[in-house]
Image (cartoon, rainbow, N blue to C red; front, side, top):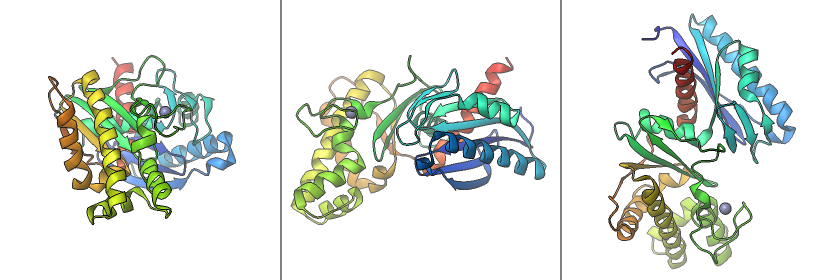
Amino acid sequence: MRGRDEVVVALDVGGTGMKCALVRPDGTTVHTERHATDAQRGPDAVVDTVLDVADGLAGKARAAGLTPVACGIAVPGVVDEARGVAVWSANVGFRDVPLGDLAATRLDLPAALGHDVRVGGLAEARLGAGRDAGHVLFVAIGTGIAAAHVVDGSAAVGAHGAAGEIGHILVRPDGPPCGCGRAGCLEAVASASAIGRRYTELAGTPATAAEVADRAATGDRLAERVWREAVEALADGLATGQALYDVATVVLGGGLAQAGPRLFDPLRKALRERLTFHREPRLLAAALGDEAGCLGAALLALDTLAKESR
Ligand SMILES: [Zn+2]
């Protein structure tokens, strides 16, 4: 049992902002703060800010009579968790940055580096919508689509740090181009950005995915079509996910999941139609909101600590 005054310094570094927190071992947050990433300054400047913010948080913890025991950092892209290296990230500009070692040295604490969606899934599976499920697929649908497969509280990383990229499952071979360079990937059809882009293209007036969902619900035929196409593509992707992972619960997070029943009702039905002998997973909305990444980074750091002390 860890002491009551122990906290983990946790950071979730995104393309535009960093969510930061001091998190107790039981997953409760004692302090949060946010900072701008300003990724256009280049990766070296972003690394400096990450280290300054983490060091500042550790100082605040000590000033409040708490003991920082570890540091957990979540970043997007390809992450080598074992070596603590941010291998590649398009929106933050990282290329082979040994962020784990840099943080450990600067803070003089054990540090863990994780992938933002994988640690988000870790948090949802252990503390959020997927708790008690054992086998959980967490799918974040926003600008892109990525997933984390969590079994008994730990998320599979993959042989090259790239597990869970279900946004790049091929669902429409003749579909729109994807950021990865291929056409017809799931996220090119069904991410929030793709839905907004598709409607804008067809209607000639700009709309976000949330607006498309609203308009579809009020009988806008074009919005209905774009929304239906996205839901069907998502169902194809999730059916593939279920064939691969056979989970008890699928937790949907990210901006698109906020569409609520407008997404979940048709998606549940479309997924059911696609499953044959596979068991239908429970389809739930994420419970931790945008805190999931930070909480997951803290959990990963605690897991690393527990392994080291064994
Ligand atoms: Zn792709």
